[in-house]
Image 1 (cartoon, rainbow, N blue to C red):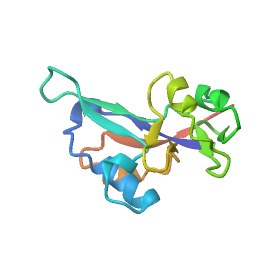
Image 2 (cartoon, rainbow, N blue to C red):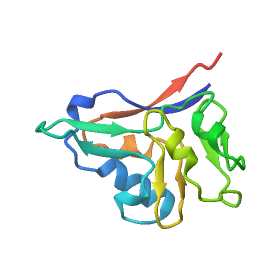
Image 3 (cartoon, one colour):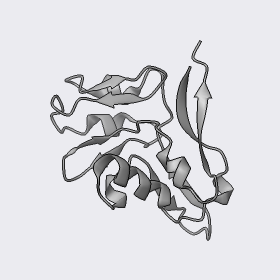
Image 4 (tube, rainbow, N blue to C red):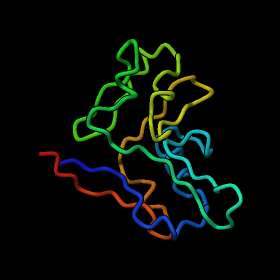
Length: 137
């Protein structure tokens, strides 16, 4: 069994960005939405509708397959793990991510893969996100 973060109540998102701030604060020790492993954006032309991009937890991730130096490796249970010492900053992983859910750290010039830790869900005031058990059998 593994855990993956999921969007469970998209319609309840108010765009407060607390999920992104919690992620960046917990993992990058910064208060910045630019350092989060997920993104929340407003749909153009739609008031109150938000797009929440987060790692789908692919078992065979395209982002890892696209990495020419294997800096991204599949994570047990879905998603990827980054070895920053191997990353050559090419960005091919971000381009290969079909749901556009792999975020990029423009300062470090490397991907920001989701760790599926659940901190974003914990700080979401409207329970939009949830850390769920996955049966990968």
